[in-house]
Image (cartoon, rainbow, N blue to C red; front, side, top):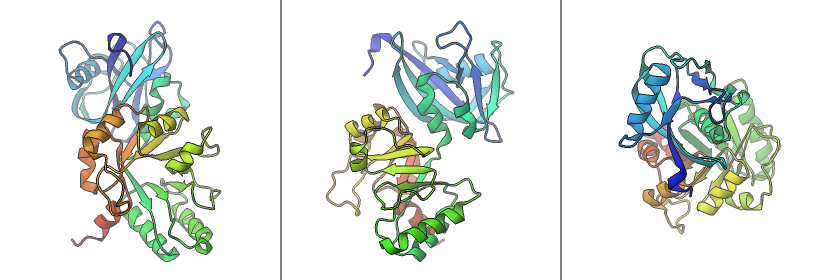
Length: 318
């Protein structure tokens, strides 16, 4: 944990326009980390709540009045000469025309282009959180046909981040199934994450998902993927994922789950405490349904992950 006496608590806004682009601003050359780009925000003053500070700073800096804000991620970072706690909020509704009231340069940037800009080091996980959706679906199936049918169900629900787990699928059907899913996702905005435990890891997918066992065996971030994530069960694994420079993690199980009946559930209180000490976006997994999204966000999660959570929603009557 960072020393409280030296800690600078900063409220930060990821401001999204109606077209989905995100507002970034250039830091003054004379400021700490000057000349780099940032998400607008500023210091939380004594007596202010974080949300009050966020609303005040965004009006002072870019001239907007926040109509609605949702917690996105908290990041603690030690620059050596300065320690910061970035309290980041997702803003999709605001009033006013954003402009640099302090003379700073600003740009509206597509989320997928954020990595093209130079940000302070503490902003790396914020960029990942800004680009990631609130739902992470995990695809499991016993046959090729079932895998493709379930994949289409997920896509029909608007899910766009999908881990291809398929550990129950016969090995003889795996290659054709992976190819079929890749073909269906071609030309779409879907991000496919292949599970690292599958015997085929060169399916051309954009992402790789490490089991906790594979994570512990890693000495460096696996190369060749735009996204790398990991399953975690405790703080040590979350810290390892952060140290390896992974993009996000899944923390489980939050609640008792039939898929792992012997595993002790974390519960929301413990989950929240672990996420607060993680330095990357974290999805909640285990015994959850889609309706648990608000509770997960309150606990600091990027969102929820699940196998049955999204399929159950698709298959329920009405």
